[in-house]
Length: 281
Image (cartoon, rainbow, N blue to C red; front, top):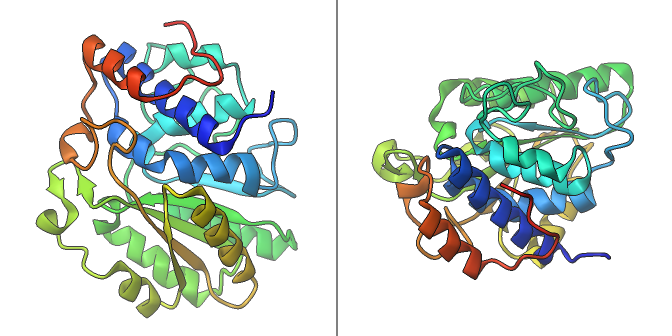
């Protein structure tokens, strides 16, 4: 059976909430806000499949997750895409699992190119991969997803400056711009201000898209790809909502790193359509 992206995204959201509930630990808010953009990316955009994937990424598109705490969405999307068995999602955050709280390469989980979790480092890693592709003549694209709260880290802006300087025009960076972080709104914590103006000032091509509208997501990815090869790296600022899809989690920092109760999980399941089959907890 072929599923629509909306159906896949609904199942991914179910996975996220159930994983975090079962583990009694994790980060559902940002995972839910990033679900639609990563669903489209892995199922429609990237030139890589579970069968072709290698960690080296030679001759393939690559994805790096910088905001490693939103590992639930990455794990679910990878499993639903066929990188590893869906049943393995039930091991999230258990001792010895391949599905650590933050992505790890220690046990060779397919689809994970680099360990993540130390915020602010992912763009630097992705830039290195993009420059390596340019040096080797590999025409493929490198993608990286950052959080907006994470973008308060100074290393993000060092990498931004370097990417423009070295004309990394095979790099598409993305920001999940949901305006929330662990301690409150991004404006209250550090005042990100006009992210578009900042990235443009650093020499990037900047696009904005609705991170929950699949038609706009498709259009924005197409525009980003069309901007490649023109001497500038590309940043997509995705307008999203923290906790999107579950009404009591939506639009608040309270679910940045908080697990639902069993009862709250059940309530969330009523709001999210089961389409591809839940895994056994």
